[in-house]
Length: 194
Image 1 (cartoon, rainbow, N blue to C red):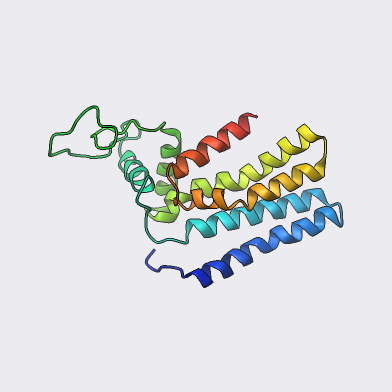
Image 2: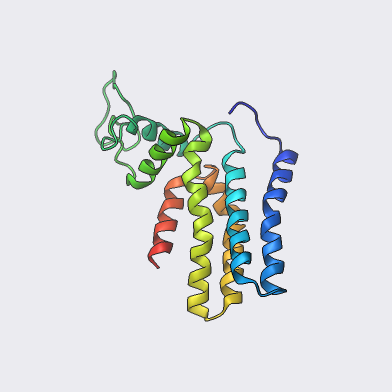
C-alpha cells in the first residue's frame, strides 16, 4: 500500500460498508427475516473491519510493528518467534521488549498473521486480515450468545449489531491500540468458547 486515505474518504468507505448492516436492521425488525438479516450484518461487519484494516498504509508504533515483524520472521521458522534474526549487539535476556526470541505473547495470533501473509503477501492488510475475519465471525458468535442467554432474537441481534459496529473493535483491527491483533484473537476464541 502506498496511499494514505484521508478522513473524508475513509468516512465515505465506512458509510458504504455499513449499508448492508442498515438493511439488515430493516429485514430483522420490520420483516422478521432472521437469516438474511444476520448474513447482511456479518457481511457489513466484515466490510467495516476490512475498511479499517486498509485505512492506514503503515504499521502502528506499538504493538503492531513488533507483532508484524515477528510474524514475518516466523514465515521461515514458524516455531521460533524471533524479533531480531541476527542479533549483532548483545541483549538482556530479562528485557521482554528487545530480545532475539520474542516470547511476549502467545503464538496463535502470530501464526494467523503468518498464514495470511503467505497467502496474500507481506503487507499491512495481510497482517490485519485475520482480525477482520475474526471481527466478522465474532458478530455471529455474539448473536448466538445474546439469543441463548436472553431467549430473545431481538436482544441477540442488537448485541451483534453493537459488536459489529463497535468503534473500539474496529480500531483494534486497524492496529491502532496496544495489544491490537492479540486482543482480537483472544476475544474471538473466548467468545467462541462461550
